[in-house]
Structure formats: C-alpha cells, structure tokens
Amino acid sequence: MNIVSKIACRLAHDFLAPRDVRRAIERLTASPDLTDDEKSLLGRIPLSVHRLDGMYKPFAAEHYLRVGLSALRAVDAALAASAPVEVRRILDLPSGHGRVCRFLRAEYPDTSITTSDIARGAARHSARLVGGTTVPSQQDLGSLDLGEPYDLIWCGSLVTHLDETQTTALLQSFRRHLAPKGVCVVTAQGEFVAERLRVGSHHYGLPTSAIPKLLAHYEATGYGYADYRTAAPGLGISITSRECVQRVAESVGNWTLTSHVERGWDDHQDVVVLQAPAGDR
Image (cartoon, rainbow, N blue to C red; front, side):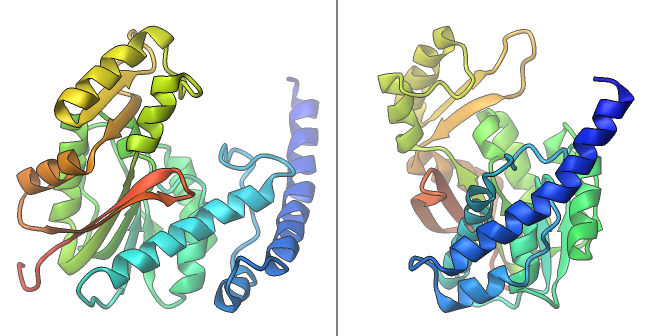
C-alpha cells in the first residue's frame, strides 16, 4: 500500500468509525436488554477508535461496545462478590486500544486509571483516551513493575494465551500490585472453549495437530495449552478448569478466589475473581 492509499484509509477510518460508534450507541440505547444506567453510561464513553485497534471491525461497532459493556458487568459482579473495597486506582492490562477502559472511565469518572500493554503505542492511546497514565509491560511477566498498588485490576483475554508457568508468573505480579482488599478480575477459557475444540467447530488459530495434546493435558491436569506456531513458542491458546485456577491461585500466595463465573465475559470467557486480604501491606 502506497502512502496515498494509507492516508486515504486513515482519513476514511477517522471519519467513519466515530459515526459507526454513534449509530451503535443509538441502537443499544433502544435495546430492551440494557438497563437505564447502562444506557446512560453509553452516552459518556469516548467515541474515538484507533485505526490499529484490531478488536474493532468496520460496521460492527455494536459488538465492540457490547464486549466492553460485558466487561464492566463482570467487574461490577466481581466487586459485588467480594468484600467491600473503595476503588481509587484501576489497572487495565492488557489494555489494547481501550475497548474496556473507556467503560471503566465512564463508570468511575474520578478514579485513577493506568493502562499497560506489550504494544506500548496501544497503551499510550488508551491512557490518552481515558485521561490516565501508562506503565510498560514486558515478556517476562514475573518481573512486571506496574507502579503503585491497585484496588482493581482488570485482565481480559491474556491468560487465554499463556501456559501455566506464564499464568502463574502473571498472577504473582498482580498479587504484588494489589492494595489491601484489592480485587483482581481475570478472564480465562474453560469448558465452553474445550468443547468447541473437541467437536472441531473452532480451532482458535491453532494447528489441528496440536489440539488433541492440548485437550489431553486439560483433562489430566485442568490446564491445557498449545502454541499457535511451534517455531514461535510462548503464545497460543489455553483452557483451564475452575479447580486448576484455584490451585494456581493458592500457589501464588495469600489471596482468595471469591468468584468463578463460567462464560461471564461476552458469554464466552470465564471470569475469575481474586481478592487480597485487608491490611497485608
């Protein structure tokens, strides 16, 4: 694509995406499956969609918004299932280009929001979108320095791509960065995705040859994982049972699994809620 074509595509996106989002909001505010509070909240979210945001598809803004709204519902349910905590500092990792944090900003207008992503440009865009700050992410998840302790951590669709060792390292980092009574909300793929892989209706980008081994490990240990490509290990697809999530969380340290909701995010991924005890710092 030459530079003229790139400029034309960017201008088209900058013009069409906000209109697409506005029209999607109009449709959603007329929908009977949203509460009045959710419809009001839709009127407060930022409309900007970055042209590199792979979660947004042209003329599919309604799904984009519904996924963000579903995340907020999951967070609200997580806080309701946990001991009361005052949410003053929020971390969104991986933030992407802001599909979820725009809803967190609308729900918590006076809260400090920090974004983080291995794609640092995406994290910076998200931070600008919500008037927040950003901290760098990295491949070594066990040594993440995420700044000050957080009262709420949202981690959507990252454990879904990690093996058990990486997931344990990530949760160790989250535990270190939780304030007293802080709540960590993590999504994972469970039995729903396992069944899709069993029947062959979805491959989730995996080579077909890798799926039987992934499922065998899942059945034997509760954690199944396979790389997208054997030549590029470290990123793929994982599935986890509730029992395995409990075991991994207990191996990390002193916090409590307060909730595990199957298909709690977008009717697809499970939502795992972990809470730090009071006064442990």
